[in-house]
Amino acid sequence: MNIAIIGTGYIGLVQGVVMSDLGFDVVCIDNDATKIEMLKQGKSPIYEPELEETLKKSLKNGKIKFTLDYNSGIKNADVIFLAVGTPPLADGSSNLNYITAASKNLAQFLSKDSLIITKSTVPMGTNKKIKKIILDELKKRNMDNLNVSVISNPEFLREGKAVYDFLNPDRIVVGIDENDNKEKIKKEIYKIYEYFLKKQIPIIFTNLETAELSKYSSNAFLSVKISFINEMAMLSEKTGANIEDVSKIMGFDHRIGNEFLNAGLGFGGSCFPKDTLAILNIGKNNDCEMSIVNSTVKFNDDLKDILIKKIKNKLGSVKGKTISILGLSFKPETDDIRESPAIKIIKKLINMGVKIKVYCPKGMEKTKRELKNYSDFIKFCENEYECAKNSDCLILTTEWEQFKNMDLKRIKNVMKSNYFFDFRNMFSDNENIRNYFHYYPIGRN
Ligand code: UDX
Image 1 (cartoon, protein in one colour):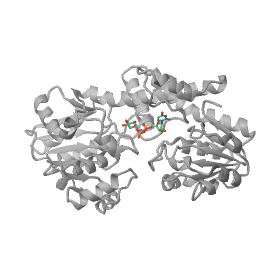
Image 2 (spheres, rainbow, N blue to C red):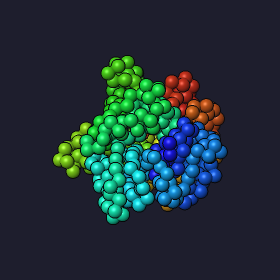
Image 3 (cartoon, rainbow, N blue to C red):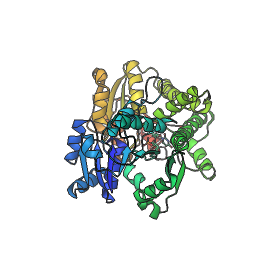
Image 4 (cartoon, rainbow, N blue to C red):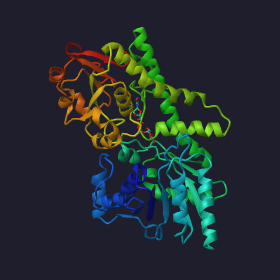
């Protein structure tokens, strides 16, 4: 089966590479010439475990191609995946320009009945709009006799585990327009996702709007869970409770579940912040007050200020001090710094007159670009020891495994003072940590 994928971001690239490894013939289309060139040479523009190796293998086997040219990508495709970005606009709504443009473009080259599968996260009603855009373009070409179905198939993969999650999803959601031929589409889906059928992964068929909302509500719910536990963590600090034990105790209740209850410095990344803002915007447009998601977003923002206040309280003043930040990516095993809480804290501290030193196993290059206007106040270091050298305070912002193994005594010895704020509770159970540092984890002593 020939598959075309439009968009080579996290979703499109992972989908393309893994499906080519499963035996499909894949063509990935993107309008970024640099990216396409890199990919043709077997280099992944993003760091994601197993991705580059699989990409190289598929290129070698001739199962995957990359192109800027819609025509060559679309003409032989049996199915077309739409996986372009829907980044947030200033008012929180999703920018649908890329998906609109991709839909118009692909319609120029459709020559047979087609199944278009939307992977991008889009507000309710968007897939119907995509279909209208495609049909309008086909009309201009006098080809509106073609039978085109647009279905919604949201992706739930996590960065850093994208390849694994793609192959091991908890569920597959397929939203179908009530006017389309459901049975025919189901049969096609079973062919495309045969691998998952064999693994007995549940495939849920529903209407378009439900599939669209299911992605937003899953991400919003997980965001609520994180803000909830972080709020409890702040209360634990005031009352002498231990948030790690509270999480453990809550997690044993199978109705609550033990995941996404790790207190920290708040959620970041390309999905939770974007999707929670989008759902607030969709709520506003539909006259639905989304007060739970609203508080979640607000608390997630406020948390950085709460934590900075904690640092100020312990250090006295922060002005003129040197603070070392360990971890820049929004979570470990990725170089993605989008909406990273670490970057937000760095900007706030610099604005308070703090000199910053940073180190991250993967997030350095992207941060250099992101913080180029702050370059006088920030030093990028080779490793955690250089980062800690002569600093007054260390803040651990991302729980990279590498940091778990660092030599704490050596870190302490190179620092000027010995304040250590562990915003991921990586060392909260380490017996030595309090001998070396004024140590402050989240939500416990
Ligand atoms: C998320 C969803 O998990 C995925 O299903 C969706 O499709 C895309 O968005 P991702 O953004 O890759 O995936 O990251 P995730 O692992 O979910 O973490 C998001 C943020 O929450 C990170 O900043 C992480 O550090 C934070 N987090 C997560 C916590 O602070 N505590 C937790 O217990 C879990």
